[in-house]
Image (cartoon, rainbow, N blue to C red):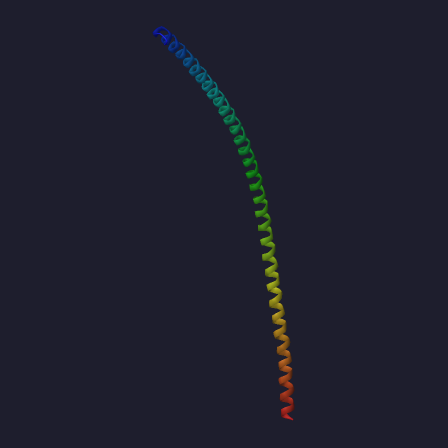
Length: 122
């Protein structure tokens, strides 16, 4: 049977071993945590750069879109003016045609009535 001194020595050795294992684990955890912090900072920096680039591209695209919308609006207004002018011209032409047709049919009607009345009076 081991003596008290041997048991104390064993316990002391186990305590030392336990402390070393715990110290190694804590060191590993600390190093890993530092690595994670570095990676997080690096990723954050990369994301901020990408966000900046995307924002710049968005602003550029927004400017281009506004320019295209302005050109399209100007073209639409020009086309609208042309359509209104053409519509007025076509409306005037239709009125002239209708007046001509009415005069033509009136002349035919008067001629027909004249012929009927001339025939009826004989």
